[in-house]
Image (cartoon, rainbow, N blue to C red; front, side):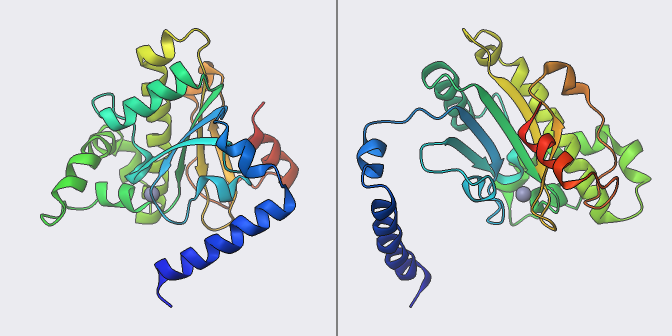
Amino acid sequence: MNRPKRMLVENVGWAAEMAASDPDFFETLAQGQSPTVLWIGCSDSRVPAETITHSKPGDLFVHRNIANLFSPTDDNMMSVLEYAVSVLKVDDVIVCGHYGCGGVRASLLPMSDALPHVNRRIAPLCALARAHSGELDVIDTMDSRIDRLAELSVLEQVRALRDTSIVCDAERAPRVHGWIFGLRDGRIKVLSSGDPADAEAKPPAASNDTAAPSAAQRVMEAVGR
Ligand SMILES: [Zn+2]
């Protein structure tokens, strides 16, 4: 069975399971959405927002693109932000990057002529890498350099989001968080909490293993302050 056929079969099973566990589930779902979180994440198949946070349909308003980049000139991104803040009135906007990001890696390598759209999308990331070349160039391995740039990029997107008129002029401005997901352990690390003062936070050099806080500390970090 090919993948799309398998997905349709799985969908029948999922719908039946959901209805069995909560007979009102789909009736409630059909009445409308009131998510409290806008999630801006990477398109990478390994970082599905709902799965890694145990969220349900209706919990998250989601925008994903390569390398979770925010651009005020991107109407796709801006329309999602506008609707989330002005209509849905979300309490929180979460930018979630991830270690080992292919989009971030591409920004540190020579551009491929075969991918003009990707090149244009990641151009701001290339500029960010140049702006931080002093820090990035002394990092020993390419993988660690990629992970550090992924962290710096999340913080950059958080700052840019906080600067938009959509967020600044909102009746009740949402908190903007910067998170990063570790593929090696499935854990989310908080780089910037919803507190604007944290936008300038300087996270330690990327590593999934360094500074190893306790599991409980990491859970507290992941849920915010
Ligand atoms: Zn990615």
